[in-house]
Amino acid sequence: KKSSLSEVKVAVVGAPSVGKSALTVRFLTKRYIGEYDHQQESKYKHEALLDGEPILFEILDTCPKGLNELPGNEVAQWADGLFLVYSITDRESFNYVRRAKQSLQPEVPLTLVGNKADMVHLRQVSLEEGEILAKDFECNFAEVAAAEQVNQVGEVFHELCREVLSHRRRA
Ligand code: GDP
Ligand code: MG
Image 1 (cartoon, protein in one colour):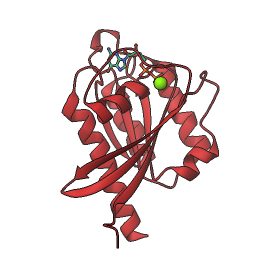
Image 2 (cartoon, protein in one colour; image 1 turned 90 degrees about the vertical axis):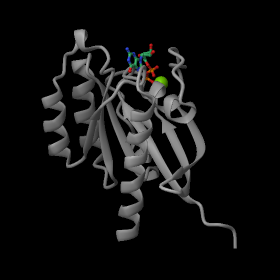
Image 3 (tube, helix red, strand yellow; image 1 turned 180 degrees about the vertical axis):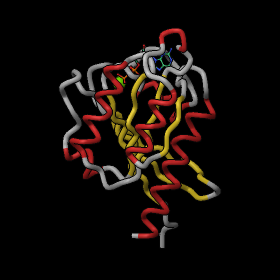
Image 4 (cartoon, helix red, strand yellow; image 1 turned 60 degrees about the vertical axis):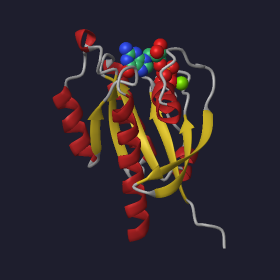
């Protein structure tokens, strides 16, 4: 029998330009390159150890063309876990996350992520608002900066993965 590799499918959802690709690439490569393809959705496979266990991550970096394009149901059906990403510098992106959650009605573990936490001088969404929304969604929450924090972004992915695995074990 082949060694059983746990597969965890994660979709990264959020408004344009919040840093979905930056977070994804940061997790995959530990790097921040600054400019990412704005045109298309990408799917990646990535093997990593989580708490000593080999995991095959599949990551769907979604790519809505505008604030009115919400992720489709196929995303919620496909994913074992979802990142709902907004930018702390963009109030509209915070509203987008709310609408995306409502339209997806996901039954999988979620993590609310407030990205661009390095841009405090341009902050439009307070830490507390993020915390309140996460409480409403009954999900984990973190403010992060794909641009600056290597380990923190990895930890956010790992924590969602742990939740997916324990959700799966309970199912
Ligand atoms: P996406 O459309 O959600 O995939 O967003 P991108 O990943 O393409 O990022 C959009 C822009 O925001 C790019 O210019 C990134 O360099 C920038 N960006 C992404 N994450 C951060 C961050 O944590 N801090 C700052 N200052 N800029 C970021
Ligand atoms: Mg992108």
